[in-house]
Image (cartoon, rainbow, N blue to C red; front, side, top):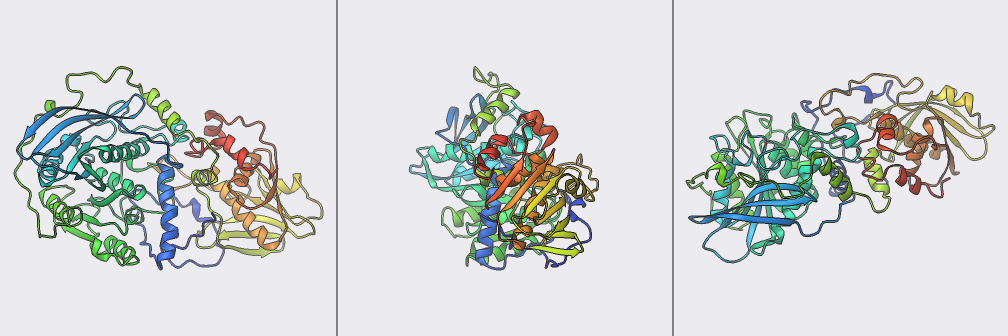
Length: 571
C-alpha cells in the first residue's frame, strides 16, 4: 500500500529546499519536537496504521512471529490478607527466562481483570520500594482491589540477566536484536500468559508503569489491542523521548514522537500521569491537548484524562491512587470516586526473587544463544514487501516538488525537506533512471541511454549530495535514517517524479555499488519497472550488510533473499 503522509506538524512549503534537511542531526532524545495535529479521523486512521507497523518493525515484530502457549513455572506461594504472591518465570524464547511475581486476589472466586506492571529504571527493579516508587505497593493494592497482577523484570534486572540491560551491536541490529525488542516481546508474552490463566478474564487486560515502565506500557498498548486500559506514568513528552537503550530502537522515531505513539491507544481509556519535576512538566498544556484532540476524532474524550503532581520523577502514592481510581472506573466499571491506597507490607527480597538460591533451568541459553533463539523465532517465512519497506524506512511520495534549470533538476518530497539533485534529458521511448555510487555525472559518463528520456541522480552522499553526520551520538538511528535507507528513498523519490513525466514503464539502472541500492528500491516499489543491475558481488551475509548496506532490521525482513524474490518479474 502506498503511504501518503497526511499527518503534519507544521504547514510545509511546496518549494524545493536549497539544502537537504536530512543532514540536520539535532533531533534526539532531548529535542523539543513540534506538536502534530490530526485533521480528520480518516487521516489519523491512515497514520495510525502506519505507526503501529513502524513500532512493530522497530521491535522486530513485523511480521508478528508465531506464538503458542507461553511456558510458565509458578511456585512459592505466599498467602497474605486479601492477596497471594507467587514466583513465576516464563520461557519467552527457547532457553530464555523472564522473572516476575504474580499477585492474585485471595478469598474471591471468578475471573478477574489482569494488570501488566513493568517496573522502570529504578535501582531495585520490580522490588523497588521507596517514597517515590513502590512496585510491590501498587501490586498488592491492585490484587486486594480485585485484579490479577504480574510484576515482571526489564531485561538485565533482578532475575532476568541472561542479557545485560544495554546491548546491541550493528550486527545484532540487522536482526532487530536489542533491549527494546526483547522487552516488547517479553511484554507481549506476559499478556499471552495472563490471558491464559484460568482466573483471568482475557477481555479485561490493563497495563501501567512509570519511567521506562511507562514506555513499555504505551509501546505494548500501541501494538496489542488486548490492552484495554493503560496508565503510562511520567513518560509521554514532546521534549524527552526516553534515555535508555530499551526505549530507543533504530527506526522507532523516524518522523514520530512518543506523543503520537501514546495516542495510538485511542479510543481505549488512558490516563496520563505527569510531574512538575521532570520532562512531563508541560503535559497538561502541551501533550495532553494533542492526545485529547485525537480522542475527539472518535468522540471518546471522556476516556482520556491527565493528572499532574508537584513532584520529581515518580510513581508515588498519589500517582498510584490516581491509577487505582482510573482503573476502577474503566476496568471494574465502578465510578465511585477516589480510591485510596491501603497500608501494605513488603516481603523480603529472597522470598520474591525467582532464582534466589537456585540456578537457571538446565539448558538455559547463553547471551549468544538468546540472540540465536531470537533469530529463529523471528525468521520470515515468506518475503514481505511491507516488512522490507518498514526496515528500509521508505515511503512512496505523495507528491514530488521539482525545480529545473536547463538539464539540472532538483527534487523534494513535499513537506519533507529532503533534496535530490539530478541531470535530466528528455527523449523518446521508455524512460531510464540511472544510479551510480559516484553521482549523476559519473552515471551519465558511464551510461548514456541514447535517445531515451533519462534521469541521472546524486543519491544521498554521492556527487553533490555531501555532508557529515556524527552517527555515534546516543541513539542516532532511532531518529535518523542510515545512508542506505536515505539512498533507497532518493531512488523512490526520483522514480515517482520520472513517472509523472512519462507514462511508460521506467527502466531502473544500478551501476557498480549502486546496483545493490537499486535492487532494494525495486523491491520496495509496488509499480511495474525494469531493473538492470548486477549485485552478484554481494553475498547477503551479516558482514556484507554491516559494511556495505547497513539497515537495522534488514535481515529480520528477509535480507537479500527477500529483495530478490520481490523483484521477480522486474528483471
